[in-house]
Amino acid sequence: MGANLQRGVGRNSGRRRHRRTAVNAEINVTPLVDVMLVLLIVFMVAAPLLSVGVPIELPKTDAKSMPSQTEPITISVNAAGDIFIQETEIALEDVATRLVAISNNGYDERIYLRGDGQANYEAVMKVMARVNAAGFSNLGLVTDPVSAGN
Image 1 (cartoon, one colour):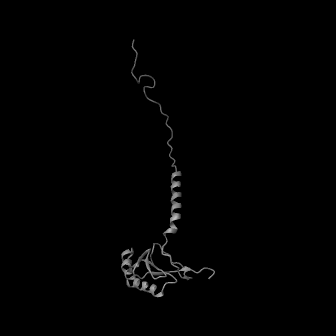
Image 2 (image 1 turned 90 degrees about the vertical axis):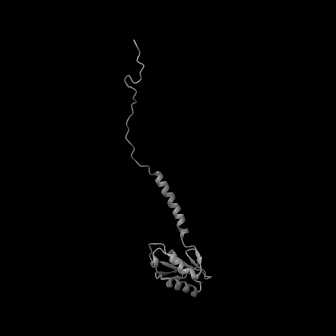
């Protein structure tokens, strides 16, 4: 007469019964929506800060805006006659070499010239002449639209 002390003998024989449930194949999009909303808010706040930061008073005209797919190079001349490429102040003699160095599309690069309404006309024309002499021909002058009251 002996007792069977071995494990695994008997009805369940050491196996646990697991219920097989269906796999949940749904994607939880709540974290994705949260991240996208935060990014949207960040970009909405940051977008106005990305404009060219040299404060000048542009002349007002009725000219239509020109379509552009890429970010152009912007040259600004303020009322004191100081010259800026994007937000970096440069000397008149360095305009051509700096443009050649930063242009991505070679001499087909789109260049916008922003001249303060109070700036000396000669200072703006000297910058235009330097840009043209450097070989860039795709030059646009930037103005503000005329308001309905003017």
